[in-house]
Image 1 (cartoon, rainbow, N blue to C red):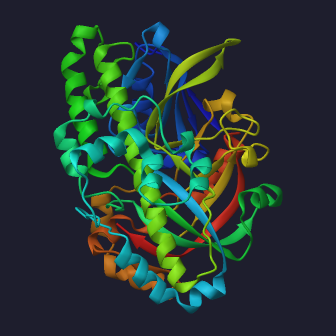
Image 2 (tube, rainbow, N blue to C red):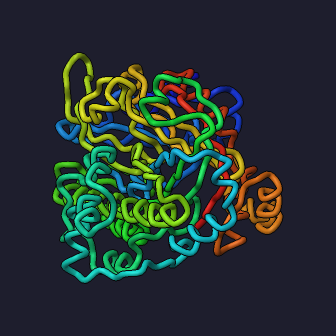
Length: 465
């Protein structure tokens, strides 16, 4: 399950790819080139990793993980975080049976689609004034809660309690803030979605009970991120990092791996802006969670929709990790990869400590998703990281040539899945066949010791950006 790329040339560490032979064959050669290039960056610790869902990305592969030591000249890379900063998934058990959802399936799908804006350029129902924008960027889901979105107990089930420290709204450009002014509470486009899913199979009854998952009951899943603000931050800082590389004595193996020393002024400024984008994503998902509760209350007044967990991918976080027998603070980049803390890990909510952190793996709208739990072995394997989805096997452009959006919508409806989207082209881009077998990806992650399977969830309704 582990494939090693031995250090060669300018590589400062090996590359490690977690994959079966079948998954490895589906990865394009660019993935291995990118894994090797990441291993050439200053201050990298232990190895450059690729998760089982890895595919080509900008700079880092999507599914790439790497940790850097600031005391050894370690860097932070905007390409190692990605453009959709803190894109992530949150999951709400509903306590409702499949039969109750199916009885109102079309009406519920229509209501969710009408209430939660989705698609390219989608805007929410309110706009943020400049001072409100800065408060949101500093406050994250805590800010959203103070505005009346959600419940206090939600914060216990969000990474970092719903707000990351060290956000610097002043490090975010006016253009990035302008793009986000009317985008709070929106899904956006691409692979973002809101799904109603049935818990179709349980693999670990004890952990599932801790997570509030029961066979035959349904959940609400939300997958989105920091929208235009995160994309603008990534674009601007990548450009600035490329221009500043020589002045920092950094020889880039690829311009897309533009980076800056963590201890540099540019590095600190990017981290402040990136943390503000993380808070933006956490606030955005908190608002959408509230909006979905409003719709479910119309149809099922008794349904509470507690938050099971909200976990991000596309982040860089300072974390304590043991290296060569010593604890060191490392800056862990996870691009298209999810933190997967094992049982008893510091930072887990008390109610989840014995089971480990929920790891939410989104599949495609036609296949299903998985809930895993962080494994005790994940720390040593991959700095407590796991995959985040199925991983593309076909580009969006290739998918639109191969599939028609209307045909996909009709086929899924015949299979019992209602898809609502403002763009049939967007549906074609996200065709189930454009993705790898999510079951094979998850099985590999478990076999590699990254996380443990808990449950499989099958979609019933998909609101697609």
